[in-house]
Every structure is written in C-alpha cells, then in structure tokens.
Image (cartoon, rainbow, N blue to C red; front, side):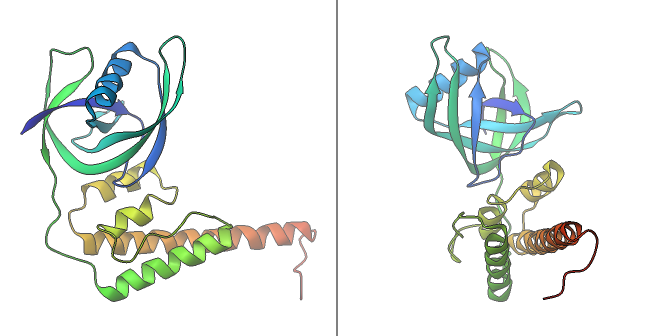
Length: 203
C-alpha cells in the first residue's frame, strides 16, 4: 500500500487516455505543482453526488499548456496504471488516500478478437473522418488503447476500468465500436433523407 494525492473529478480517465485539465483551486494547484516538481503521478478518481469511486487511474502531467499569472494552470494528463482506493487519509490540503495497484487476470484476448476490434475502429475512424491513429495490435491492454480514442459515457468507462479480464474488456469495446459505427451510419442516412425533404435518395 502507498499514499497517493487524489484529484476527484466528474470524469473517468482510462489508461493511455489523454485529457486536458484546468487547475484553479489552490489545493489542486499545490498537488499538480508537487507532481511537476518531483516528476510523479497523482490519482484521478471519479466522484459525483454518490461519492468517490474505489477504482481510479494514475495520471501523469505530460504537458503544461498554459500558466496564468494568478497561478491557474491548463495541463494535459495521461492515464497510467489503475489503483484501488482502500481508505482516504488526511494531513494535506488536497485529498489523499491509501491505494494498491489493480492488476489484470491472466486472460488475454484472442487474435481474432484483436483483429476484429482494430477493423471496426478503422471503419469508424474512416467514416467519421477522424485523423486519430489506431493503436498497434500488440499494444498492452489494447482494449484501453482503443476505448481511449473514442467518446464513451462515464458509466461505460467505469465498467471498463473495473474489468480485470482483457478478453472480456476487448469484447465489450468491440460491441461499443460496432454500436458507434451503426449509430454513425444511421445519423448520416437520416441527414441525407432530411436533405431530400423526406424522400429517399436513389443513386
């Protein structure tokens, strides 16, 4: 077990995912300042009216985007390993907690599942006109590398964060990619029909 500085937020950070954060509260400016000075990570945990969740992600500041004269910061962070929050601790201006690593079970994804997930991501990227690069097939925890590249609801990301089987997690990501692809095609078909005053366009 180790003690970790925590940043409770209304977002879920997946491993390998990059998100910008605006740091304005004094206590979190202190936390991020220490992380920058000492080259260490902090814990990003999802929090809402129900409280703080017990599984979070280590976050590293990979770039300081802006520094303001009043001390506020815009930073870019990247998700690393997962951790389980065992107990909140006190003594610092920012939240802290006793944590332990969360490790996957020995349940890797099948090659066919990997190929299908990458194919679906490629189709989705092409149809959406996105320039986001696909992760390599041998990426560690490919499920997270793919999920980090698409917009997902908070609850779905929490489920992925808690899942300990890469096989099961990648299967879920494949379902999500397939659903997103179907939704995108449906939206485009509806837009084309609307553009034709409700008439189906032939040819």
